[in-house]
Length: 466
Ligand code: BES
Ligand code: ZN
Image 1 (tube, rainbow, N blue to C red):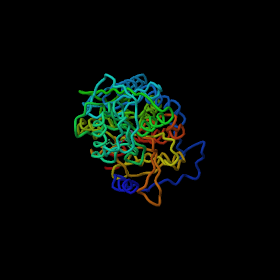
Image 2 (image 1 turned 180 degrees about the horizontal axis):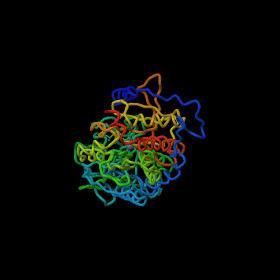
Image 3 (image 1 turned 120 degrees about the vertical axis):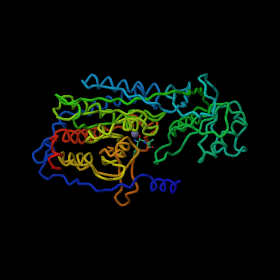
Image 4 (image 1 turned 90 degrees about the vertical axis):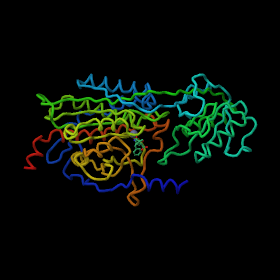
């Protein structure tokens, strides 16, 4: 298991370069951050508590927000209404997304067990509940490992390693008369705890088959151990003809000709099924909303744009749709994109705020962030190489962009990196995964970087070229 995980890591997109210009300015005092006498007015204005209130609303009041679902739509309205109330011009950009298959588990023994999971498209998808006692069965890829008591029950398995393995578990349970099957994953793709998933069944089944997160499977297992028995109700929904939305807020400069250079702050506001997505990525969206408030009255000759992307977790759908629909002229207007994704984890090993580009190169955005960090006398900002978020479509279109994310990278081996184990799981909640201090630092660094780009004279580039 360990070796295959490392192989995965090695062959992944990651090869962090620890090339950071981070020597703090000796003279700057902690209480008056300045570079060449320049003070950032942003740090006085940003309020991490306000950002975290948004994180709470998105992750607790709304909860998991899979792309195209009603919860995602609710989140888009929340973000859009907040931006409108701040005086921004707000537009919702719709786009189509693939079907979702969501499973719901209700356990009468505990109100906290009304959990969202992935449902196998090839299993029974019904809003009529299948209710039965739960039984945990170890292994299960061999028929003789399934006891006869499985008959009439919902079976909980640790998901077999391969698709083939877990299909055997399902088929064996069905052969023994199971009324439902729950497969829970032990480990995720980046060494995180297992997340919910959509089981891929090779044979159609007439009972519900769900893919659970590790935390969900484990909690049911513990409940069984403690109480001896428990009854679950399973329901599933196939959602089709789904639409997701990008929320786009703009503020044009006074007396705008409509063609000024633009600076973009972005985040994705969706989450994976079953995950409240407090850090991934209510945190980036909370930061976006708080920076929008901070920049309401900032004087600039440029356009400032805040974009909350939908359906990032389905495959960067929102940002791809956005970039695909920009004309050449519109692309050329964009100076840079500051994309915040996972900006407030409390995971102690994720100790640096990285400005990541897909190929590890520096650009206006990474430079702005590293300069802001010097200006703030903050030595926690580094530059690195990473894809996997909404900065990627911009980078591919030649638009300077960077992903901002808290991560830890061991210097002795740049291929090993630390990211909180709870991301993409039910444990990615405010209580277990949010740090107000990390949010504050991200607000200050990104806010100061954006501010400095907005303050640069618009003619500077042309003068240099002449
Ligand atoms: N926030 C994550 C990206 C991430 C996670 C970066 C951990 C670094 C460490 C993002 O929301 C995500 O999960 N992206 C997908 C990629 C996408 C193309 C579906 C991923 O990495 O699986
Ligand atoms: Zn994310």
